[in-house]
Length: 330
Ligand code: NAI
Image 1: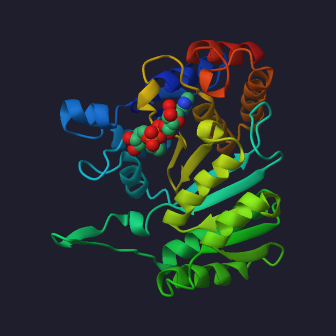
Image 2: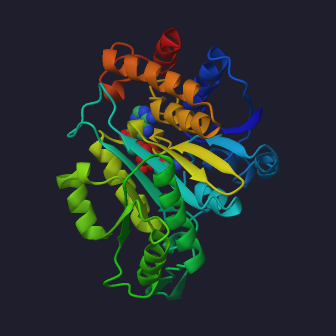
């Protein structure tokens, strides 16, 4: 099959090369079709996507994306937000699992964060009312809320999980978060075997730090999902091992949760693990569970051994050496 690979900005090309090498080493039936997108491409061409990228995703349906940089405050809008809206990838799925060999405050974390990906404050409806006042619109629809909640319950059902927790602030945002919560309650009735739980977002942050083991699948509107999923990544030692999938009815775009790491770009010391784990997620969704597990196991072994890993996790190896070591275990 053909799939789209977007190397992206900063360390993106280095960690994407790692994915290409692993694909080859595993003899996988995937031909990567590469397209540029992001700040560097925009600085040269004034366009954020290479022409052909959108058509390629439409044709091949599956994509793996490296991080893309977004200027803060002014400038072009995020490539990620644009792709999520363009391809209606309404669910952002982030499994958060402890990784052997990674120093973290907790062991045996196994959570899945499911975040609504198309609306809320990320819809980008904001404007200056006057020179001293800006207004942003928090847009929540019943349709998108029901869809993401149903996705969360279906995910729980398919993966033998027992509980789905809705994260909200409906006590204050009675209409917007109220609507999300109403959708959650309605959808939960169709899943009598799965326990529904509702937790206010600020309390949720505290509970996750105090008692992460009491949670299972989490579902949230876009903004809370974005913030709480990084908190969840902190539970397993940071963003270095956090993959995500942007899932729609037709299209799927997988990526690492971390950004383009401009401070270490071009130095061949970027950790490729999160993008490799995003690739493993993609393999799993393609029904290639055996291959996904093989890749995760090989990565796990190299990380646990701690010899040929990159500096961010205490080693001295380059991205390339790290990748070659994984290939050795494959
Ligand atoms: P970042 O995740 O790029 O970097 C934060 C820190 O983590 C840096 O010290 C960096 O060196 C380190 N780091 C991140 N990934 C690493 C890896 N694979 N290996 C080793 N160290 C790693 O976050 P930051 O600095 O806030 O954002 C930089 C740019 O990335 C921004 O332009 C932002 O918009 C973009 N970004 C893109 C995302 C995406 O495309 N999905 C997600 C988050 C940020």
